[in-house]
Image 1: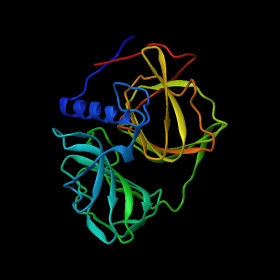
Image 2 (image 1 turned 120 degrees about the vertical axis):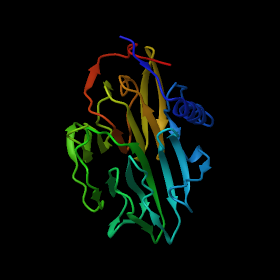
Image 3 (image 1 turned 45 degrees about the vertical axis):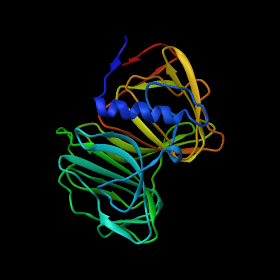
Image 4 (image 1 turned 30 degrees about the vertical axis):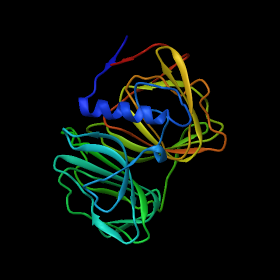
Length: 272
């Protein structure tokens, strides 16, 4: 079965630009979706919702005012979470410290603020680097109140040899989830696909990942700051996938999903 991926025009254009940028310096495989993107190679952009900051933009949809960014907050910065009507805000602290209201988040800290959660004070005395995700509100979502994890305690759950996860958010209504995935050299390389679009940011370590596109294996390397936005039903993770010294990913899916395995890289999807 061949599945076509169609994106809203503003988003499709920006994704195409991002994929092109990813191929500039290290010549990773070219794919019709963002993969092997290194954040530090992206240009800085102005983010109106967080004035006085520097941001790297992965995707942005002007029609819904949603987007994905990595943001640097300067020392002694303060503002608000920058929420927009009918959108949710997700924050993940990569470096430094950030206060959301009265709660201080250290690296690994996470906040999910549903639609309508406007006016949260956001501040950083030492400065910080964060992931800042805006998403449309899913009417089937059950979590309707803010969820804030300070990052002090991380409870990893082993899900396979060499692979552990830490769930940051899992909505029983929409099926959306956000989690951390820790991989060691013992992890097995297995071709899998998810029925939901998945995006990821490499928090630490280095990771080689193989993508399966039109039945061909495309392999590239991720360093800290690496980003991908992988369409649903796309095989990945087999071939030369692996990490020598371990890696930690920040991952998210916006809807419920099931994951299936394949013994080989086969042609499963096409992208328009």
